[in-house]
Structures are given as structure tokens and as C-alpha cells.
Length: 266
Image (cartoon, rainbow, N blue to C red):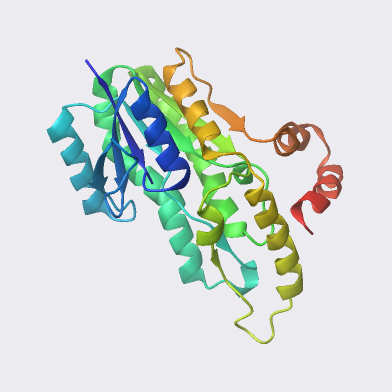
């Protein structure tokens, strides 16, 4: 029987690449997005991960059409940039609503089907920014840090029931994510951060435009889904970015911060 994968955020970027890659392989793919569009050849459904009823309706559609869900790949999300002091809490909350709560909402709705699969898989799209804080993207990092802890705790709960959880942590990836990032400018005349924020964000955008292709992330997702014993976490990206992960674990905090400043543009 064909295994069924649900990919959120499938209309663009990493989500679109994942849907296309899995569809070309051994999976029957349903691509979910707010607009109902997905990669060529995949079934597209409308799902707004910010909305309980939309997620429930999307899950019902998949189960009605296919009778099962064997894997979920959560890629829906966006970036928010700006100084913490200058970011309205209402806007910061929306960042976590989509990136964190949206993922939690989808997984909660999918878990009964993943358990019934008896070899259910969930791949959560995290980020190196979920392990290393990114200046002037504090709320984006917060959403991914939260996702890391959520997935780790969830894995303990569901692994005895046959569901495997993996966090994929990309570095810089060349997608529409850069242009679609919500950037808060110097709306306030007393903003003392503008010069520093522009430098840091300029560095980040340059690195993203020179990042890996999203198909490399999709290949990693496919590998995780086919692995008999998938890892809890796996990073993907350029070596110079990924080396920061073991460095943060091994170096004293002060030394790591000193080494990271130039690469983070501060």
C-alpha cells in the first residue's frame, strides 16, 4: 500500500521541494498550504496552520481521500526581523503562532493517524537558529528553540507507540524565505538599533542568497523518512554554518560568543 505523507508549507521553499522530492519517490504526497497549492503532481489542500478548524478540515480531507497518514513534514513558517525592544508583542506572538503553535497544532491532529500507521514519522523543520540565537531575529529563534524542546519531549511520549520524531536543522537556504521575511524598520524615531540591525540583517540576507538549494534539505528529509532508525536531530547546510553546533556545546559561553559575533554580523 502506498505510504501517505502530508507536507505543510508546500506552496514554496523547503516545503515545496520536500513535496516534490517525496512525490518523485515512494510516497503519495498531500501538500498543504493556505492557498491549496503544492509541487507539480501532488495533491494540494488548503490548510492554515494558525487555525484549529482549518487544520482539522485538512486532516479530514487527507483521511477521506487516502485512509491513512504515515508521515508528516512540517515546513509552514516565516521569518520576522527586528530588535526585541522595538517589536510589538502582538507581532511577536504571531511569529510563534505560525512557527511553533502551527506545528504543534498539525502534529496534535495527525498523531492518531501516525499511531495507527504503526511506523509513523514526523519531521519538524527547525533551524540552526533554533540552537544558536540570531540577533535581530530573536522571536524567530524563540519559535525554533521552542520547537526543539517540544519535539524532544514529544518523542519520549510517542516512540513507545511506534511514532518517530526528527528535527531537521537547515542553515542558510536559497528560497523565497529571504524576500518574504517580515522586517520591522525604524518606525520609531528613538530607535537606537537601526544601524546595527541593518548590518546584521544584511549579512544574513547575503548568506541566505548564497545558501544551499532547498532540494538538499528535501533529500535529507527523504533520507530520514526512509531510515529504519531515524535520528532525533540532523543538520544540513554548509560546513562553516554547521560547525557552530558542536562548537556551542563544547566551548565556554564567552568564547563561543566571541567567535560567533563576526559570523552573525554584530
